[in-house]
Length: 263
Image (cartoon, rainbow, N blue to C red; front, side, top):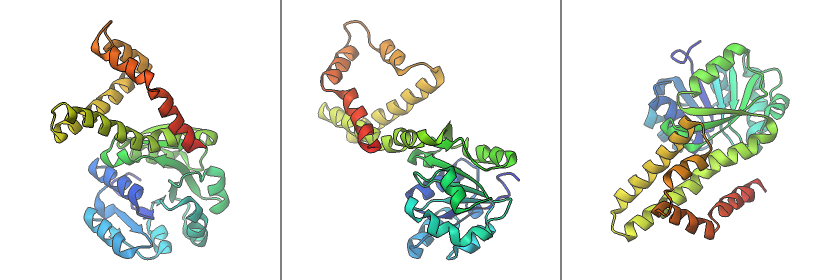
């Protein structure tokens, strides 16, 4: 099976589910008419599916039976109550992908035993085909299904495979940090506006800088410190800014934010 002939069903169609759907459509991986979805709020669901040319269903059992790939996009505590009643509708060729934070392979196997499933944590930039997908190394997909999984998601995300014990921290760094990064972009833009840039120009400059910096780090394969050192000329403007950030605990604040989420 290839991406052009499959049906992908979303159980839950909130921000992240919609983001995945938009990313796959925008990247040309799927078309809207290959996507079906169910959610508790049927009015909101219909508006969301109509916007991308997808189809809303009211029955989770009907969705599972009609889907080649099922995306479980509900709250972690709701996964058992959503999946257990329809477990007998999950066919041997069906791939189940859980994006519910903290529901790992072992827990999925307990909920829907003897099915083909994999647990992942996506982030919101996947909607722009610039996402990250933290992927648990343990799964029950066949080799063919895993190849299909990578073919579907590599066009829209970096797939980072980790073991179950590192799924949480991987998810925090990739899916919580966009909020922290947006705050950083906003702060840079505020500074730009303070010194005369228009708000629109300041946002564009800061956002593109973040995008390009990430791309350069990935392309070079070097530690970020290398890029920092390359930009900092002796006695230059950039090293003065770096020193100020250090004096104000910039790195410590970032680490503390991650620790606060990790608990």
